[in-house]
Length: 130
Ligand code: THU
Picture 1 (cartoon, helix red, strand yellow):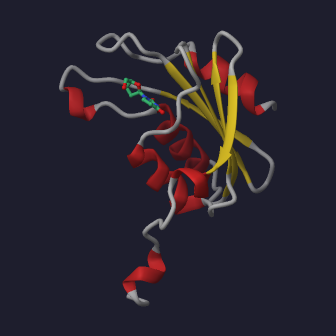
Picture 2 (cartoon, helix red, strand yellow):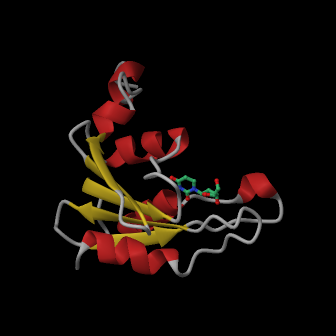
Picture 3 (cartoon, protein in one colour):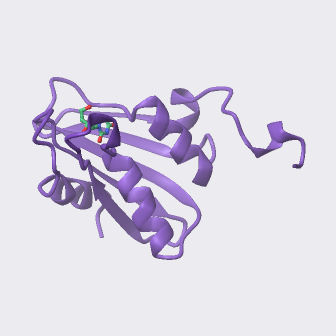
């Protein structure tokens, strides 16, 4: 399945009554399979989750532990990058070479790598083998 189509379709199911900002995301696992997610907000605001987190959860549920690409789409003036927390969540399952495609519903597009967004990422190696 196409990564961008999956993110676009997922966005339609977003639960974002508080921000009104619906986001769709899709990750491509190393197998080539695509896993999608949308943001799910909560009346207790900090309990909301980002679209990227949902897509990662779907990937893990499907039995995949490695992602190579992520797409994010929102109705925004400019392509929306994953938030700081989601950058770390993406780094858990992919290296700095992960391709990040950011899109708006209006057709704008930007692209970079996870390494661009999260330089000097904290990783398991920093824990010295614990
Ligand atoms: N949001 C995402 O789902 N992904 C992003 O990359 C940026 C922000 C969501 C969280 C919240 O539901 C809404 O957008 C406004 O911050």
